[in-house]
Image 1 (cartoon, rainbow, N blue to C red):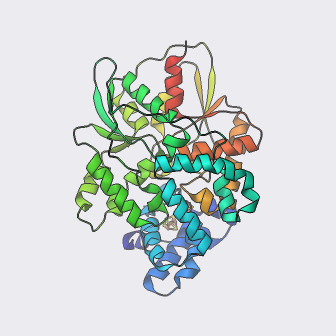
Image 2 (image 1 turned 60 degrees about the vertical axis):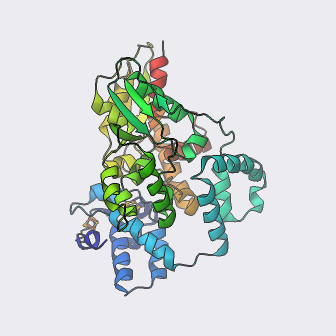
Image 3 (image 1 turned 180 degrees about the vertical axis):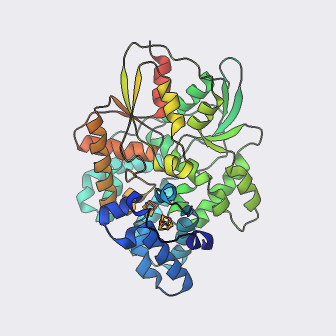
Length: 404
Ligand code: SF4
Ligand code: SF4
């Protein structure tokens, strides 16, 4: 944390990139402002309670990192600070109940599926619930898709060119299980054998980003033990999971697994990145139909993992696909893990703005690499009456392979 604080020279170049500054226009809700606040708390010159509202409003979107000429690694500061703060703060009762509900369900697919099913009925009674619960109910989909399962090993089609392990995700496999089905199909089609380790757990990112280091460490430990060493890479198809797993060295810092976590995180890669780098993509049939694809960069891909070109290279290989870049690609859609539950007003404003931008492109479909963005943008596109489908990059690729 100290290095991140000391490398900030207070130049303010990050301000324009920060969505909360754009929304609220206050210095204390900028990366620079938050760095000063966190520094003062750590030095004991500012009460924690004075900094918390501003730190809580941070999306963790990391748009400030690429904007910073001094190379401040804001990620090294935010989650570790939140983990420290969580031990000292006392949250109101209802907030504690809501957070407990989220942490007891979201990372566990079976429990989350049951909660989502029950939540469908509870949504009818939403006005009777406290405000802090209403945002949670609003995010539950009308129809939870049927459960899908995947084989422990899916062989490569044709000559095997690589062998990977895939993290199957927690919330994603309930909200949109087809994303895993599509990912496996696209990888196998491209000569990649896909292993789904049965003992894997949630990646831990949701817990880590809200300062619950105990749970984050528990999940990270499970995954370190669950993923095999004899694969070319550990793949994720959710930007948030990939970004969280790249921070296992922070989550497990100072523990017996610190070295193992450091090695592990370098093996984690987004599925689109692995496929694009492997190259020699299996050719797509020409459907004869032009498709305009708007690409929404998830901030945990673009800002946190510097992934921009690879999904575009894959989508651009589809015959007659026209890719549309959105303005201000670094801007978060407001999903950001559980942010749309913790800060529903800011999240809704950012979601509405992003949906408005997408509508203006007149795209046929929106591509993204993160279930959080997909859920958030689907909600806000529908709210604005738009019927543009939003799909995971892997779903678009899989469907393009099936096109005739
Ligand atoms: S751009 Fe970097 S150095 Fe400048 S204020 Fe922001 S975080 Fe600090
Ligand atoms: S992580 Fe995002 S919201 Fe937080 S300070 Fe950086 S740019 Fe702003």
